[in-house]
Amino acid sequence: MIPYVRDITFDYGACDQVSPLIRRVVANNPGPFTFLGTGTYIVGQGEVAVIDPGPDLPEHLDAILAALGPGETVTHILVTHHHSDHSPLARPLQAKTGAPIYGCAVGVQAEESTIKTEAGADLGFAPDISLCGGGAVLKGPNWTLEAIATPGHTSNHICFALHEENALFSGDHIMGWSTTVITPPDGDMTDYMESLDLVKARGFTTLWPTHGPPVTEVTPFVEAYIAHRRAREAQVLAAVAEGHGRIKDMVPVLYAAVDKRLWPAASRSVLGHMIDLVRRGLVTTDGEAGLDSDYRLAG
Image (cartoon, rainbow, N blue to C red):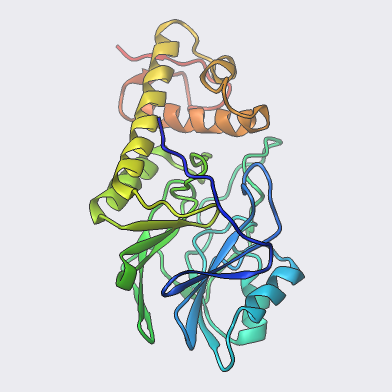
């Protein structure tokens, strides 16, 4: 079982000092994919970085600007990925502050679908400075942020490590309140599992997801995240072995305890597992792996 952390105290639009170097302002955009809203983080004092400005809400922009102290300036705007609850406010914030936008441009375009699997996509997102591939180190007074490429939830997902606090701004890669949706073709289960292993190996003390409270027992939490995915994979394989090779027949059983509003998104996550299993030679299907394919065990 994943030891979810969901307790968080805040007021929309208020600025909370949540660690010596981190402030948080939560946008009023709660929903099934955003939990209680987008948490925008302000890192440092004096010259600061803003991580995940959030949805294009004028009141949230005002709240971020109001959170700045006298004489403070935004020198970096960082975006973990291009979903509409993370990136759209980057350009309006830049218009107010002049700060460059850092991130990774949209790579794989999501296929047209009537299935709502996220809060929406900002498909025009294009940073001023590309961090694709990770490794870049950004600095300000008394703070250092390292870009870590974590594809999986999206092809362009970037996490940011704050060296001074051994903390990771994990975007939607790892969230305390829920598992992460993997939606092919932009989401990729193979990449996602490798990215989870990468984060685990770094030994962070704290994870700061964009939605919800921090994760402070990081290693066991990430291990539980990985175990959950492997358990789901085993369930999918068992369903296929029993002759239930269609994704639409698996989801109501595998996700019986999950909000039904998320079942369409869950079907995409099962597809992510199927694509990964086909790549690994454990499952086979005729033609390309898709939502309506009929799957069977290989061999």
